[in-house]
Image (cartoon, rainbow, N blue to C red):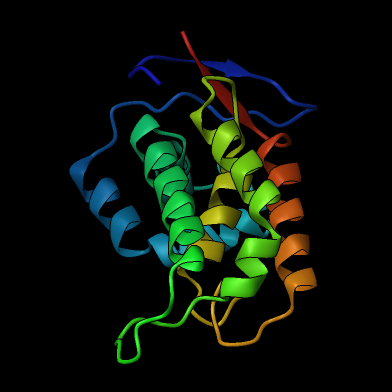
Length: 166
């Protein structure tokens, strides 16, 4: 996405283009990204506060789209490898991830396309990838729970306020 954006309406909600954001707002949004992601994932209006608006724009950046797509691809690759016997990393739900390969690859493809996506969907994905107690992690989580979470992310990516590049 370019620095200049065009706003596209979806229903009666739309994400306003980012004005030059102050350094203070950018740093506060970065420091509070976990809370802001959870708020946006729950459907909070990204235009309600400067912090949410800044986080929404950051989530929709090309860099963030690429980073989250790469994180999903890394999870798929890790799920195929044998687990290391001693590791400080949170164990991933290998079987559930392998069973959800198609859903994960579909989201990766969507993130790599230049078409619009919603900040809510990106926030949901960010929360899913960072929640060590969520359906992507643990030794024996339910594959059904992961598939449901991925379906919710895929649906949210296509709904809500969106932005497209000029």
